[in-house]
Length: 428
Image (cartoon, rainbow, N blue to C red; front, side):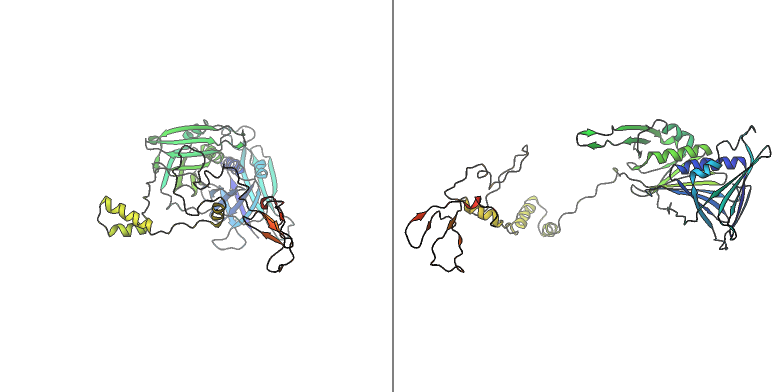
């Protein structure tokens, strides 16, 4: 049996509503993990490219907190999952009103009903209003295994910190249809937040028009800024907007930690016992990386070491290396074509290519490709009508090569071939 009871103040209940709104933009299902020291809401999107975890301290955030998991021990925990919309229907937006008007609550009491004699498990929320009215909500939950995204901040050498109110002003310039956000650290002392969308083409039709909005921020406006120049980190702009809007409700600073493109990025912020961590998948490139020189081939370098460091020596050495290589073997099909067209089978000298031409010229087929066929030299097939030969040695159909006539065994009559080899289809 699990024992989980806690009480929220009106201000804390309003913060629970805000975090549920934020997590609902990442996933329809919210997972809950309760231990003796903390209470955590987690969400993972369907593509598993964004993970959100908002942790509430048992001593600072709650007015009263008690958690005794069924397995016991200091590391025991209770986990379950519920729909974000179901929780939002309970934790409404006007739970906290500083002026004490209608709609505000006095406190919020939450308990978990998990007993062996009960047919169904329930997550019970009681809203105690100022007028003595108590609203009770019983929500169904499911047991689940909570997944956590691991992020090592010691590897993340790039980081910056900026107030959430300033970042919220920047995202108002982003277009509604933009999809990606490029965070770029320039060499001119500025950090650029550029939201954009890529055009998608279907043949000749453009399905999306590209839209780019860039906001440049001076590094002096940041609380902390330590990012390599020339580093592009790209994330989803909708995820970034959801994070900034939630951070602005707490009026706190947003901290970003990342190492390089294609590695995870983490946003972190929190106050008054609430800590939010969002781990996002990234892409991008690093245009400021120094170019790596291409090493020379080992054969050339070993030969160059044995010669004097002069230009003539290197030139002679290069020629000797190429002379050791055997000439390429010409394919048999090209040899047969050259023989049939009356050309020598030796390799022709290379013809310089035209740099402005769209086609690659073949020196062996440059003239013959457009020349008319010589039917007198074309290979033909003759019919041997004589019966004085062995069928195992002389087949009925004989490939006569360049012969254009066939003689019969009984008479000296000559019959011209009736069909060329190139016109026969389906026999080979």
